[in-house]
Length: 136
Image 1 (cartoon, rainbow, N blue to C red):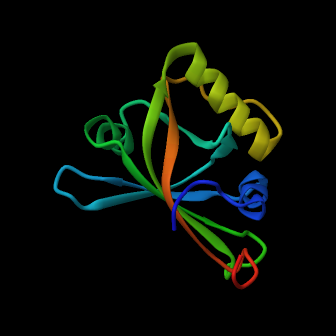
Image 2: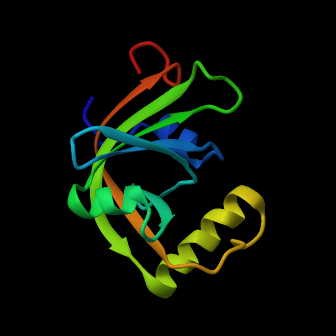
């Protein structure tokens, strides 16, 4: 389905505290998947990673991303997103982002002081299962 506009019930679902399985493309074309914290803000998805991880190398080479967000209360409700990295941030900005994500998921700032990278993902496609009424 097209990305614009994401219906209100799907935006509300993204505002809930669920985790996302985030897939990047490896150098050999194989997918690499990681479960991550995320935040829906300003029409994009924010994720953050420690610098130097496989996903950061993959995204530096190929900005395409797929995400699956499953309802933590009902695994038969899910949202599947495709997009690409529209913006990255490092340094103090990325540190603020991981603290923001940590507070969302744990209620406190992030525990480790390490180089971080933030990725803002612009959506290009979406599909859902069980989140919209038939015909929604």
